[in-house]
Structures are given as C-alpha cells and as structure tokens.
Image (cartoon, rainbow, N blue to C red; front, side):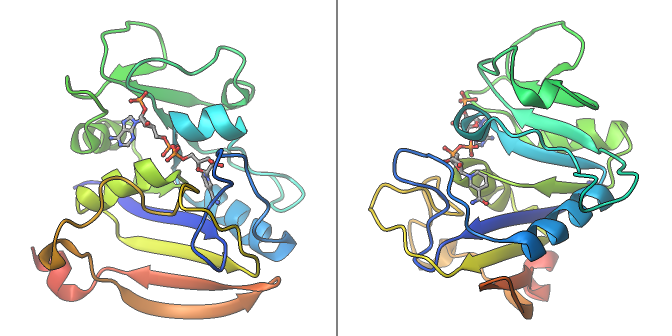
Length: 213
Ligand SMILES: NC(=O)c1ccc[n+]([C@@H]2O[C@H](COP(=O)([O-])OP(=O)(O)OC[C@H]3O[C@@H](n4cnc5c(N)ncnc54)[C@H](OP(=O)(O)O)[C@@H]3O)[C@@H](O)[C@H]2O)c1
C-alpha cells in the first residue's frame, strides 16, 4: 500500500502558478489559506520540489492563526542533486526529509533511485516506512507532473484565482513534458466546486477506470 496522494495548487484564471521568472504570486486569500493549512494539518507529510524551495523558500508549517495546536507534518523536498540551501526555512521547525539520488549518509537525507531524478515509487515506499498514510504535494509544476506520470495522484485540488498572469514561460500546475498524444491525456473526475475568496476551488479525483489500470 502506498500513501494517498493529494495534490493542491493555486493557479490564475489563465492557468499559471507564478511569474515567468518563477517569482511567487499571491493567487488565493485568507479563506483558501485556512483550507490549505487545515489540509496540511490533516496529512502526514507535505512535499515540494527543489524548484519551489529555491523560488519561494517556504516554511511548509501549519500556521497557528489557522489551526490551533498544529501537528506540523513531515516536510519532504525532492532534490536529486542536493541543492537545498542550509539556511532554507524548511529546516527551521519540525521534521524534514530531503529525497535525493545521491548517497549522502546524513540524517534526514534519503536516496530514492539512481536516475537523474527522485524515483516517485521508491519515495512513496520510504514514506510508508515512516507511517505516512496521506501525502500532500504542493508543487511546483515539474513535481506535480511526475506524480501524475507515475499514476499516483488520488486527489487534485485546484484553486482558480481571479487574475491573469500570462506569458508562455510562466509555470503551470502540471509542467513536465505533458501528453505526447491523445492516449496520454490523464482524465479526471470533477467531485466538487466551491466559491471561496475571489475565486473557485475545484476538487478532482481519478475516474474509476483509471484506478483499475
Ligand atoms: N501557485 C502554487 O500553488 C504554487 C505552489 C508551489 C510552487 N509554485 C511555483 O512553482 C515554481 C516552482 O516550480 P518548478 O516546476 O520550477 O519546480 P518544482 O516542481 O518545485 O521542483 C522541480 C525540481 O525538483 C527536482 N526533482 C527531483 N526529483 C524530481 C521528480 N521525480 N520529478 C520532478 N522534479 C524532481 C528537480 O530538480 P533536481 O534535478 O535538481 O533535483 C526539478 O527541477 C515556483 O515559481 C513557485 O512559486 C506555485
């Protein structure tokens, strides 16, 4: 059994998640932040890619402003080449794990596969060993793409904010190489939609036929 994988991302009305130079953009508001922090508090681990760590330097904690007595789940970074800065804020509070493809031998670093990038299947096995039953993947687009390609996304939450970022190089929720042909397209089942802040939250799951694959 692997952990349940929930992807959560906020995008503009034109499907971008940051500026073309990868500068962070505030896309949602307080209502959505509260939802995300409650979700973070519910899961066992939160995961981002090194691209997000370098661009945003996130804390990946649960804010007490939104959740009383937060649990602070395990923070996981996909970082094949060990580029996470020592001063990164993810190290400030709570437990963390850096998933890499090199032999590091330091506490908190694990090797997941020998390829160019962290092997998602191996990582999920490692997380099971650490009692992770629910994993929240928060981005960015390259990492989310790998989880979709591995066929392990159980839930996809997209907040669509009322703004346009534009630009052909701005990152999107699912970057990577994308579908090469019609058969590669990944279908979703829309479970719910909810207006919040000045936008809308769309919650998708996998269609039953996808789960059987
Ligand atoms: N709006 C939102 O909700 C939201 C949320 C999060 C991030 N963002 C934005 O997203 C942008 C960062 O996204 P990004 O796509 O550049 O970076 P990313 O997805 O955060 O990280 C990608 C990097 O992770 C490493 N990696 C290791 N194993 C991987 C694997 N199996 N699959 C994919 N990547 C793997 C790779 O670097 P190595 O090869 O060096 O390991 C890769 O370049 C920033 O602009 C940030 O602001 C937006």
